[in-house]
Picture 1 (spheres, chains in turn green, purple):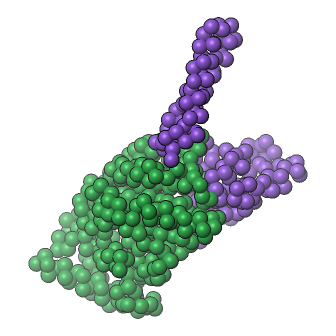
Picture 2 (cartoon, each protein chain N blue to C red; picture 1 turned 180 degrees about the horizontal axis):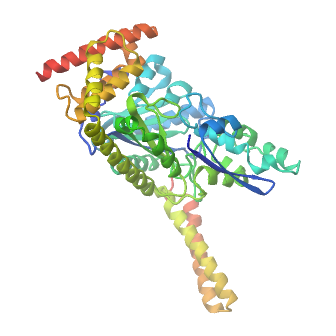
Length: 358
Length: 176
């Protein structure tokens, strides 16, 4: 079954690739929201229209090869179980909104999972492209290329003055949301992030948790994105976000260095305690697991720990989410059962990793 | 807690700038904070902003029902429903609610109301032609005012030829 292909591994293959500044920026994402001219928007469209949008996409794009990302495969939300959809959300391949609220929702995923085109979410299509590290310009190029391919066959809802017309006026104009996932333990520990967030808001940027709007920042991972989509060009939006992210990277690095200098023993103690918890705990809640994974990741970046790789931590961040835990258990689990399974999964993966490295 | 929300209220023409933190905003009921308390939901924020639109605060009793009763002919969405869900139903809504849109867009997009980014390639020619025609019409106006009728006639002919090209595009030139 095609769905299984995309969830066999918790980590998309591109997450193992190297990229610029991957010690702090986990990934870059660009999303373009587009609607088709001859249909009402998904928030109000009829079943017939919803079906027609999917058929139109199917006809033109299923099996299509996208540059070096491989072929596109269609997953229709109606044919998936809630747990299966949850797993796709945990991998960041689809949005929580597409998983739970869409009618005639679907997504086209490329072989390497760098491209995900969501269909009938809030807008007819949302072209999403991902890459490791800070590579917003590159992912914008990829998204633009796909956008041009779609526009060869479909007329978009577009207005000369307002630009690309979207369901929500917060996306109108470019329809572009560019975002980065950043690991910021230094700024959190030195309590600088509280001052940085309002400054970013002033610049028209938004700081959110790991899974987007309304989600919690698990394990010091924050998603930073542009709020303004109108009155600025795509290039300017991406360049402005990139330059702010570069400043945050510099601040995070200097916070880490300051901590390592002034509180070396306390920091080392914290990192090794967290490492000890991950290796030994029998019951661990997702929040504690995320905090410990963040500490160990920092330990690797600072050179304290070299027996495990960051790849395994990226994988554990996703593997220890409720959806994946239940997928591996083969069915629903109570919260306390999940905490036990999470702990044993982490122990197994880290032991495996240590054996491979020894 | 530092101020993270900055917006301007106009009530009966009186300008009032507000700078508040999430906690105060919640207490004042100016905007809705999402349940997770992790910043603002765009849609809720939009609904919050819409609720303080001057049209809802207007002293003229007739203005409010008039705006609320506005309805999109294509998708049947009313302005009241749009305020409630924060989403339009179709592209025509942008025209139907055009008069209400600018204050909303200005607030959400830092004062911007016009797109300056990408143009879909197949529409590009038409848009470019239209912009050229608009520019030439300004030139024509100038020339007529200066009573330079010979030049004006040349420009007029150029405008007519461009408008013909434009009609060809709209009637299905390169579009399929």
